[in-house]
Structures are given as C-alpha cells and as structure tokens.
Image (cartoon, rainbow, N blue to C red):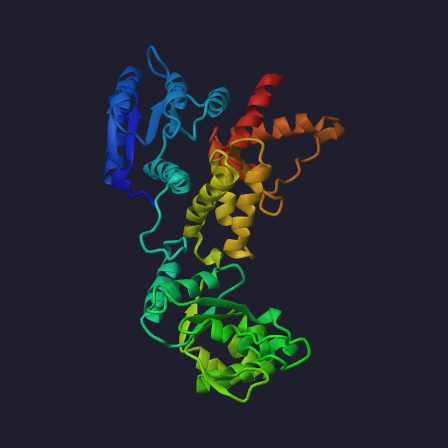
Length: 451
C-alpha cells in the first residue's frame, strides 16, 4: 500500500523565506503536496485545521523553537513523521531531537538529493505503519491475503481453474497456503455446494490406502464390522484435495492413476464398479518433474494432474504482502485473545519485512500469535521478536591504551561517536549500530541521564 507522492501532505516550517521556498519547490517538483509556515505559531494553526502526514521544521527559530513544535506534535499528532533541520549542527541538538521523537535530522546546507532521500525514507515508514494499521481487505481475496504481482497471478489462475473441470496441481513451499488455493477453486466453482475433502497423502499408510480412499464393505477384512465410504465417495459431486501428492508411494500413485483414467473405484471387498464424480486438486512442496526423472513419481500421473499448474510464490518473493499479513494476523489474534491491537515499531516492521521466512505464511502467523501472547506491553519492538529475526550488533572495540572501562562506558562512547560521525543523523547512526531508532532513543536517554 505505497502512498503516492501526491497524497502525502508535508508541512515545512522555517523562519527563512528563502529556505521555505527552496524546500517547497523541490518537494512539489517531486509530486508532494506542500504547505509552509514561517513560525511555530503558524504551524500549529495549520496542524489544527488541516491533515498533515509529515512535518519538516527548523530547530532554531525566534520565540518558539522547532524542538517545542516537535514536542507539541508528538503529544497531539502521534501519527505524523517529523524531520528536524538546522544550520547549527551540534551533538546536543541531535540528542535532544532524537529524545523528543524526531525521525530524521538533516544539517544545512543539504543537497536536493539528500532532502528527497530523507523524505522518501519517511514516506516508507508511513507506508509500513499504515499498512499494518489498515483494516482494508482486498475485495477478491478468497481468504488469501496479498496484493503483490505474484498473488494476483494466483488469483487469475484460481478464476480459470474454477471455471473448468480440469485437474489442478498446486505447487509451493510448506506454509504458502496451498490448501487455501484449493478451497478457493472449489468454493468459486459450480461444485461449491458439494463437499470439499482434504486428504494428506503423507498420513495414509499403504496398508490402509485402498480402504481410506475407496471405502470397504462389511467383512472385507478383519475389523471391518460395517461398510464405510472412502474419501472419493464422501467427495461425490465435489472436490478431493490430495495434499502433498509428492509423498505418495508408487503403489498409491498407481491406484490414483486408475481413478483418473476411468473415473471408477472398487470398494475393498466388493467386485462392483462404482462411478465417481469427483474433481481432483493435488498439491506438493516437491519438484515433481525432478522426481519423474529419478523414477520416484509416475510420469503419466504427473501429466494427468498437471493440467492447470498453479505455483504459489514463497513469502520472501512477495515481501510487499508481509505487512498486510502482519495486520491481518494481529487483528485475528487480538480478537481471539481479547486484547488490544499491539503497535509494531518501525524497526520491528523492517525486521519482519526483511526476514527470509523459510516457513512462509504459516511461520509468520505463528510468530505474530507468539509475540502477542508473551508481550508485556502494547508495543512490539525488535527485542520482542525471536532471536532468529533480530538484528545482530557487533561488539565494541576494546579501550585504547589498556584503559579499563565498563561495558556501559564503552557503549556510551561508541554510540555518541557514531552519532557525531554522521552529523547527528539518527537513521544512519542506527543503521551503523545495527539497532532501530527507538532503541537508539532509549540508549541516548540513558546516556543523558548518566552525564
């Protein structure tokens, strides 16, 4: 849910008309909607009566300073992003701005490119936060959350598969939502009113295979006290979903092939042939073509199943859907746990978006449930995420000259030095330190308190 530039409303505050004009012209040329104010008093008036997404303000101004405006915005408009600009760079000003909640700190004179890059970065933060907080769901989702190009292709294939009776093979890594796609095909087809039966091929031992799939008559084997319908009969008129077909034994593959060819089954213990009207949708996390080449999967069965091929992209290939999924699962578990919707910090959202997600959507859902259960506050930060997801920080260098210092002193000097080396740019300092901005703010407050 990227925010278009023309929809982003920016308020620029500076007592210099020349600076206001330069910034306004550069931002409007980039497509942003810009309002200017020559004082904090004017800025407050704009904020009270107009929607603003972002404030860019000078620090040193007559009467009321930019730091005072920063505190006012943080107390009254928590969703607004703030950038501080100054022609008098100093570490104290940077520390204070960071402590009070500024998202960016830009030192004059700055280039047009530096200004636009900082504004773009802040716009991306807004996008992340609004995506997670948004209650909007895609109109045509089939219960599948996502709006990426890869998922749109899946939606198109679902439509095509639902309009035919052709067999379907759904491929994708574990946790990508293969059964959701199968259900979407069934429930948008003419068979929606008939049963949808899911069968895990891995879970059926060969000894029970025929009985489970095709049913058995009374007395067919020891323990068969009554006749029982198999999965194909239960799914009559509807759809049978053969999950993880790549794990099916060669024996099971042969029996399935006969059903696909003849649309007939034999119940165990019966000589009577029964016609079945059941659509087959199969799914696998394996490379079936590779298995065919190695002789582990029947080639004739593969081609009969693979009439319509629906590959589902892994989550790492559709990162633009991650925040939408975070929003969906957060709302889901807030309702189930009867708790408030937690707020994810920007640092935590970046970690979630950049993680490779080997377990895909299932892993993401489990993680959201976990952090909501164990979190002690309504704010989820990087440190609330599992260690496998967190950014790792490098150890500080040892003290020079053999001087003995505490770990806290070394950390304090390292943070202050990094911040000074980037002219107080909090974002750049946090990147170098390997932490998010909120953690940096907390550490700076602690450093300030120790001085």
